[in-house]
Amino acid sequence: MIDAELALFLQQGLAINIGTRDATLAPHAAYAPAALVEPGGTHVVIYAPAVGADAVLADLAGNGQAAVVFARPMDDRACQVKGTYVSHRPATDDERSLVDSQWNGFMQQLEMIGTPGESTRTWVIWPCVAIRLRVTALFNQTPGPDAGARLS
Image 1 (cartoon, rainbow, N blue to C red):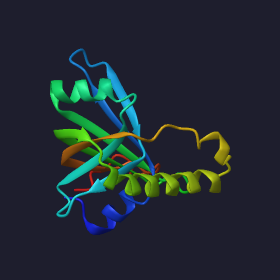
Image 2: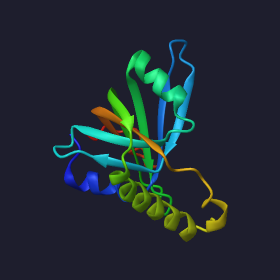
Image 3: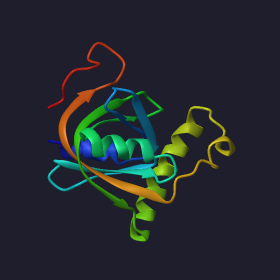
């Protein structure tokens, strides 16, 4: 479902937000410092800080639906990945370098567009919970005439 080019984009260090809803359709969201596209492109792992992910995890346990938006600050390229919940677990120490690398890439992009690094370096990114989703749909979210178009 996610091809090699899109996988490279999604894993380069972007603004990542996972959105869910509860039984009353109230929305919840968590930012994520990193994501991993599994081989084959049918599943993604979203790394969300453990602090602040409770409502998202409760929603996923309840209805299993998520929308994850990936956006690149320097040019506004964006993609939305819809998915169904598979599982979650604490991220391991072995995954910390992936999280740090992608988060640092995102921080560099923010600095490129004028956001001072000292204003974002204090955001909590670890420990994380690794949320595994099965990809069900992909949408272009880059502003412009193709925004909202299905990618596959």
